[in-house]
Image (cartoon, rainbow, N blue to C red):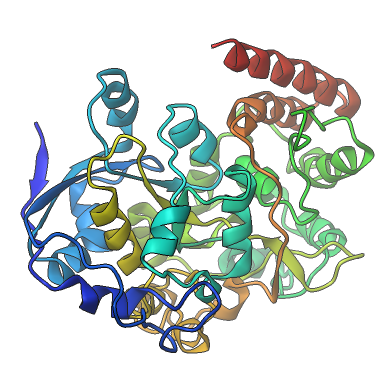
Length: 441
């Protein structure tokens, strides 16, 4: 059944553009929000935009909370037809029209490009005099890498990695709490102090989200070479990065097992069993219903992800969610202008207050981060936004296919089933095969 949300197209689009677009790409528009006078105005008629989630399992209610209600308020004559991520492949196969797809940068290759839904919005940006200078620069660079200098979409929010921890476990073992600015070596030593079995209960010191640790790595290492798509897992830097992370799962009491690379299992150890002391996970994960419910009673806090000792102050990469105008859309102008509104100061400020990191450079918006978020009140919020993001690693349309073998390698290394060199060699072979299969389609 189609999920149609009655919205409209009654507000003059000039007002929208004044909230969302800037000058001519050189920042000549009105400060903070404005499109110049004379910006493009859409046809003043009702329009239905089909929106497909391509990033998570959010239902229609969550979509409305995060985006739909704001769009409805701004554009009373737009009707949004929402479809969850599980429906994306079937809709593409059935050749059904999609106007907007939204997904993370990490899933863009598999959820947009592999389906042929990408569309270069450069002309729409020019036509609407949208000011890209308002956006955090790395988000634009990511798109330019994917689109060979063009842009397929606009960022709407971002996330990154931080280190959550359970204070009760540290108190139980008399260990000091983690702190902002730690190095990975310091975290390694701290993990030893909270990895043990007591009273028949196994307490693990540290775990992580393997996919996000790889995608957002602080060394900005790509999976593939940009021009040839050569797999780069065999490089010395990649081996060092892998060893830095997997060594934690050789510590007594924190040994890896079949569940180590399964993020949902690690989250459950942290928030349900409460036997995991520290979890490196996305900063926006605290907005997930299960985490929020657990955090009501859990004695938790958060600090910045540890730094590499040779790069103090350098955090992980930014991990934006982009909204894309689909190549199949018959309403590309309307779709773009709705997406542009989601990058406006007005919308971004409200998102930031909720604890959703903004993609704008606006100091006012950044300062408002999590002000209205009751769940993180009294917590170390500054630890959730790095002093400096690492440069974005290259993504290509084959990145998702290449990643599967890498995650298998990390799991096998963590369980002691293979050494690093062997596992990464197998991952390279697996990735090369997957890329060739995609290229042959």
